[in-house]
Length: 360
Image (cartoon, rainbow, N blue to C red; front, top):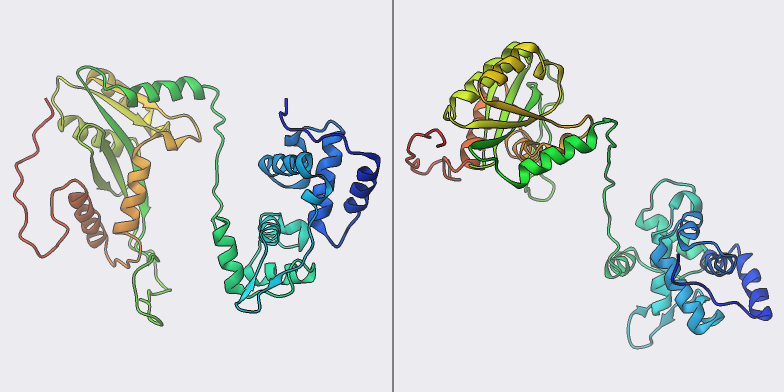
């Protein structure tokens, strides 16, 4: 149940609200009036927010204003205030209106899918919210209201009927290390093509590195089987030409040889077809290996994914490798730095490390 509701308006206030609702040239007043009228009609705040394209927090704020100050508290006049001794200033309610317009869906107001500063300024001037405003002032006003340019994000819902049992099993593994075991995250990275990859870098004004736009893919592809050790906080990988049950079984045998035979390997990996072949499952059963399958469409449960993102950024972005050997050497160099096997300076004296022993 909503804790904030609009008080019952007096007859003259209701007539004023209905006039404000019909103000096509003043979208802010119209929206505020609709909030009060819908609230008095026993419409919940969440439903009002969905209908008007605003947040429930803004609905509650308008309701508080109405309950405290009535019509004057929710209405506004589209005028700026000019100081004779200084630059143009905008009253707090004007800044608030600018912020509300910027957070409104542009599809409903201007028929476009996204705002830009020039289009927002043009709309504010056309609606007489402000007489004039520079793009820099508009940018600073939005920044002061903590409104900044943000990229959208995606999300994916798992359709696995066993999602919650698999999710809890993996979370329990991450929470506590099994006695006499080692926790590992395994996944494949690739395919790795020989192609220019764009990226970002520091550069002087009017200068940027250029990468070739034409290339051929006659060099084939490579795949990397990666493993992230949760106990050692190390990321390692082995490269292969193909990705199938044979190459995965070979990688699994190599991985088994990296740890003591007394340790049980608890491996988190996805449910790819070649991960669940009879040969792989039989080898795991006879060599103290336990698999934890991630649900379908929930690869984010595998902790190696975030480490792959960093590896791609620092080893592949803004590069144009001409051979797979050069590409693999760059990835291995990054992995050595990430695992504290070398210093950041490539020309410094290499650090001496003892051979990596098997975990006890």
